[in-house]
Length: 244
Ligand SMILES: Nc1nc2c(ncn2[C@@H]2O[C@H](COP(=O)(O)OP(=O)(O)OP(=O)(O)O)[C@@H](O)[C@H]2O)c(=O)[nH]1
Ligand SMILES: [Mg+2]
Image 1 (cartoon, rainbow, N blue to C red):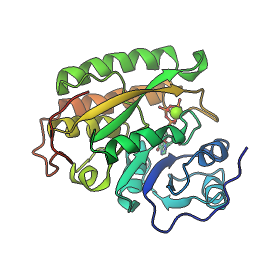
Image 2 (image 1 turned 60 degrees about the horizontal axis):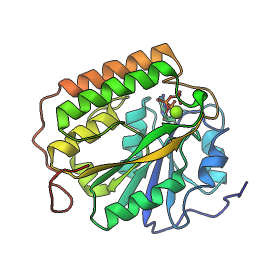
Image 3 (image 1 turned 30 degrees about the vertical axis):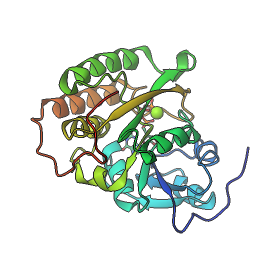
Image 4 (image 1 turned 135 degrees about the vertical axis):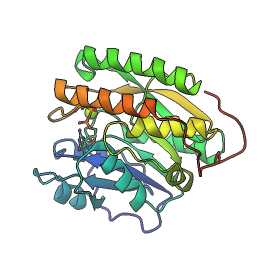
């Protein structure tokens, strides 16, 4: 495996937010796939397995977030980012961050405002059946709520930093990725979706592999879908209506 021992770029063109809770096993694989010139922002959410030290040693910038929750970690990364374009990727080696290169190009070229990866599971272990079924139902509700022809709420995504901050996202748990899409749609962003391979995660499953995690995620998502449209401080980053 390619070792990443360079220091983080001082003036990154892209920041990649990597929410991380005990992902020491996966970190070398993930960080080796960050495109050169981009900065890996590993948001350590209270890991006890040495993830933070390992990430730093592999050349990533480590942000600490003491409040638990996927959304808390993602939002801490977004707040710490400085690049014009910010990407998100899980830190469990289920998704290859190098696949973000065309996503970033699409945002930079002004062809889309938010680009999402539609997870295509590689093998049965990648996505438990109950999680897959839940995702299908959720995508249906999302299409009804936003009018966007989306099929997944994948964690691999890219958008411009300042408009993302202006969405004023408030969810700090599993509803964060859904709230991002709903508010972007309400603000008239063009949201696109592209297939990405979804690999069996490395390390211990925390959400979709457990009933408790799945149940909490469903509750968080329901709450977000029930929110009335929020008058947005975030106009579409570039001219144009929504498409997919
Ligand atoms: N679940 C969870 N994940 C967090 C948290 N903070 C950071 N993360 C990271 O967020 C990413 C997504 O979480 P995962 O546990 O992979 O969630 P998932 O992909 O839905 O389900 P599994 O891969 O089956 O656990 C991983 O990189 C986690 O390490 C947190 O408080 N809870
Ligand atoms: Mg995962």
